[in-house]
Length: 324
Image (cartoon, rainbow, N blue to C red; front, side):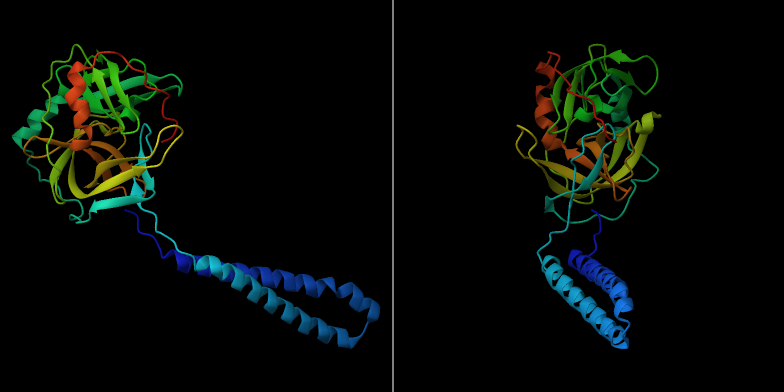
């Protein structure tokens, strides 16, 4: 979460500064605007009167401006909180209101160590790279995904937004496999791909929420490069509230805030614990702190994983993401 200065203090300082500038400006206008009448009358008494009146004018304007703007400085202000709202090809987390359901904070980045468990290594065979052309944006989008059912891959909706015919690459090298999107939920930011020629085994999803301090590895293909495991620690669980947009009402989803270095391209990749369970789906990184990332909890995507095998009809992926 971003650290914010106390808003009333900032607003008060800005108020006083603005009032002083306005007062000084009007005072100078009053002072120099009277030069022509002074020259016409040419009396010494007017010089003294000008000085007194200018000082009084500056003081009056300063007090009036300060008094009126001070009401604004005293008004209630709620500090902005982090939420995952930007669903783009390479999303960041911006500031907005959220409610924290767990506030225990884990240590800063705490890697699992140089030895990655056999269970994690086994799971990485089912983590794939996803590529696709988004004609409406005139670009190729890439991200990560993982197998959740036979011939079915889960990823983020923003990874395939605007992509008609995505391609899946196993191990990040070699030929790509044709795929089609059979589930696309931009509100939750989850998608399911049907990949008929994919033989990698499904990964197991966790069935319970993970406490703060849980260690894991964010698996994927950051920056469209080779496969990488990024150490991650669950810092807290957040209820992410997405505002209503158009005909879609507000929604709430549960996400993990992570102490992790999440890079573009990690989106859609699994968060794997040392036991080999997937506890979440990485989908964003913070705009304020490069060592903070976010993942949808396994519970949030369980419905998609459960129904994945029964999905076969290709669905629209809407328009591509236009911001980064």
